[in-house]
Amino acid sequence: MEILFDTANLTDIEEMTPFYPVSGVTTNPTIIKAEGRIDFYTHMRRIREIIGPDRTLHIQVLAQDADGIVRDAHRLLDQVDGKVFAKIPTTEQGIRAMRLLKDEGIGVTATAIYSKTQGMLAIAAGADYIAPYFNRMESLDIDTSATIKSLAKFIDRHGAKCKIMAASFKNVAQVSAAFEAGAAAVTLPPFLLRAALGAPDVVQAVNAFAQDWYDTFGTTTLP
Image 1 (spheres, rainbow, N blue to C red):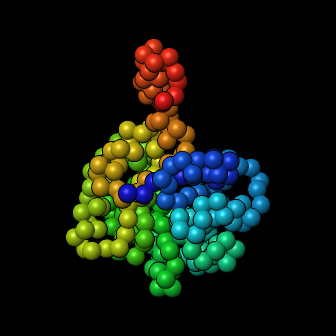
Image 2 (cartoon, rainbow, N blue to C red):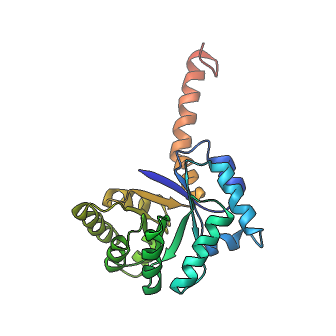
Image 3 (tube, one colour):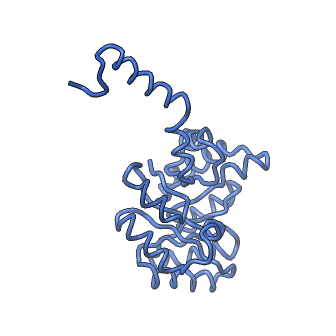
């Protein structure tokens, strides 16, 4: 099971990585926009410094044609580091680029997946990760859990070295559903993790335990 932060916010990554069992960080142009007009490559290298070499870093390309996607992927590896996974939209041009990059042994994350067909093609193209958009698919009345289950079976049946990394979540219930359906990884904004652990019922239970101890022993610490 892998949990990744879907953010480029350095403060969140630096503060929360020591607390949560995260496997890496994913970004895209929309996430980057939230950080403003940053020094892009310096910012990405800083993320790598924070998360270390053993966690994965997934950065999206900008080009939409296969040759441009390949150039973008090489630029990311040259400017950030050689372990970056290039996030590539699962279009016709994207599939071609995935095949070319995998021939070079470059890490590929197939993104913007809305259907089983897209997922299967990306798996066949050699993608290391495929990223179905959970909430966006549900908003289109697509059975996201069923899609993930089908893709997980496809991976198992063919012995593919690919992981389903579900993305685009609105709440933690969707995250749980993705894992139950067969996703090996999820990427989500840090606030969803904090929301799960900071739910009012959780806080109330912890406070009640502390109060019961105090009422019994008159202290707030173990003897």
